[in-house]
Image: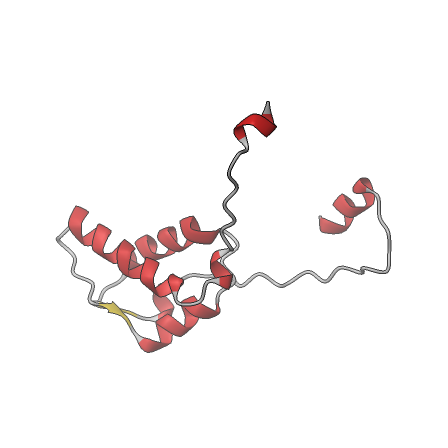
Length: 112
């Protein structure tokens, strides 16, 4: 059955690999938030905040970005968001030993 409904496959790269899309999506989320709640006006991101968003790994992809923008807007006390407004915790990259062959149980233990 899966092969019948799996006619077209669209590959969308993760947000961390899409460069400027982070800033485009951030602008979209700002506009949406201002449309919903026009009591707080946010004029955008400082240059440093843009750099912070671009450097972040985004393991949660677009949804994580949306929540980060919403949280920063809610907690911000100015009209320009700064890096301190974003509470992003960089995830250390896990290094895998590709020389070693592991079964599923061993791999799960290594991940946790």
